[in-house]
Image (cartoon, rainbow, N blue to C red; front, side, top):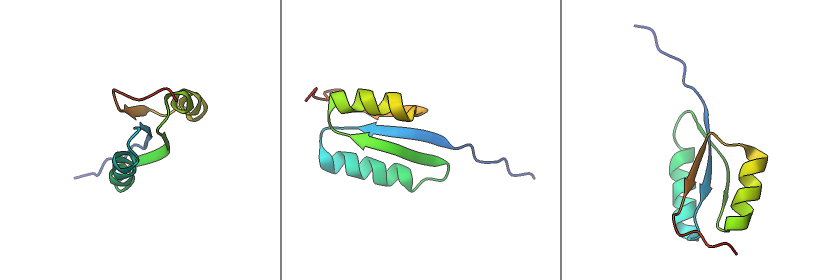
Length: 67
C-alpha cells in the first residue's frame, strides 16, 4: 500500500491566556504536517500578524481582547 505525502498546514494561534496559547502551540507543533507560523494574545497584533503570515488556519479564543 502506498503512503500518501503529508500536506503541510500553516497555523496561527490567538489566545490571551499565555499558558493556554503556549500549550496549543506546543501540541500543534508536535504534529507532523503542522507548522505554527505565529501566535499572539492581542487582537490588534493577531490581525496584523495573520495578514503578514497568511496561515491556512487561525485557531482563536472567542473572547480575545483588542489591547
